[in-house]
Structures are given as C-alpha cells and as structure tokens.
Length: 82
Image (cartoon, rainbow, N blue to C red):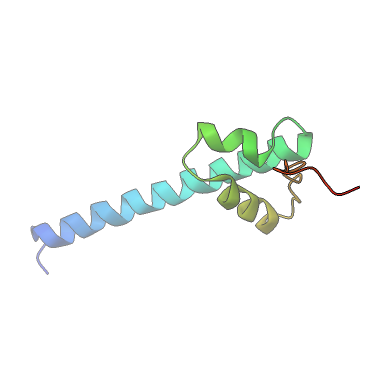
C-alpha cells in the first residue's frame, strides 16, 4: 500500500477513533462502578442520563466486581392472597 492510499488512511483514522471510544467506554463504566460502590447512584439512576441501559450497566458493574443494588420492590397489579 502506498502512503497516499485513501483506504489505508481511512482505516488508520477508524482504528484511532475506535481506540478512543473504547477508552471512553471504560472510563464511563469505571465511573459508574465508583459511584455505585460509594452508594451515590444505582444502575437505574444512571441509565436515564447515559447511553447504555440499566441492564448493560449492571452487567458491567458485575464484571468489575461490584454487585449492583437490587431494583427494588415490584408492584403487583392484584393484591396478594390472604
């Protein structure tokens, strides 16, 4: 490939951007883990303000050794039997 090959240049730019995106993603999930460990946030409070869903955040937290808080009580449409 010649140094002026547009496909080689485009590939190089793509790989550079991909590496930056991977670093940003890692930094984001590390920040999530810090906040959950400190008790400042939960996956459900982070998700509406960010790109991944709460499920993805919980998965990444577990991968980092942080057990996320449970979702909380579920509401029932019918009252429990007595």
